[in-house]
Length: 270
Image 1 (cartoon, rainbow, N blue to C red):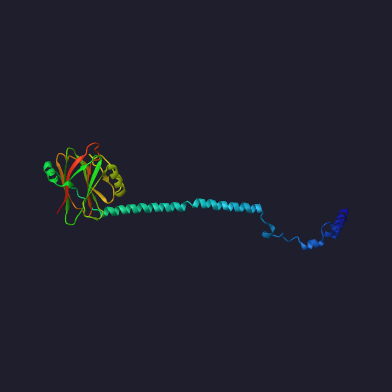
Image 2 (tube, rainbow, N blue to C red):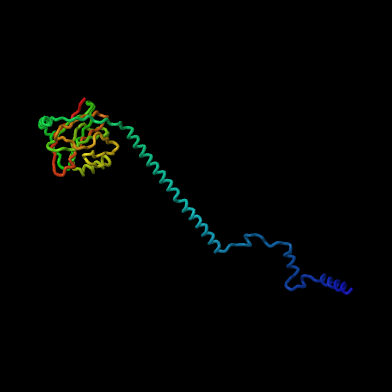
């Protein structure tokens, strides 16, 4: 019975309580902010990044962009260089193939020797242009262009006392003059000139055949060999392979002390 009375008294006290019974809280405040209303969730108002955070984010973005730029930058020039190199290589190969296709193969020359050395010297002594001195260390080159009236070129030569190197080359460059010209130079000057005008020159032993020309317009007919022209007449002929210029080389570059007296003649034949 006492319990029931205590419970009834507690309920009556609770029902008489109001929010105004607690200090700092009013009914007006509770009406303006109901308990069932959620806090403001507008992110633009509830959160604003600090200046330090913005600076860190911008620095991170710049770092990523710079890293990506460094990774991608070399790719473009590398591809360009590779393409340029491939194009250059392809062009050189194509050019070499085209030049090789334009130049027909050269037939070997017809050569012979004769014991009539005195007879040839006697015949040529009357023509001052047919007797020359090839000084030690020198190379004499006779340029003989092809002519439409003939079909082949012929040569004969002999020397006094000692041998001399001899070789023939053919220049496919179109003929601009019909004059036969002679060029005499020291071996070193001759090498420099041919490197500039005719391409690389590989020197070798004249006894084994020297002066291998690699220029695209210059073809080798007979490599330079030492010939026993003091013992017998050295002669031969070669049919024109087409339009161009023959280069007859008389080589005394291997001689350190001796000059060579050369008797020679070059002529055309039908």
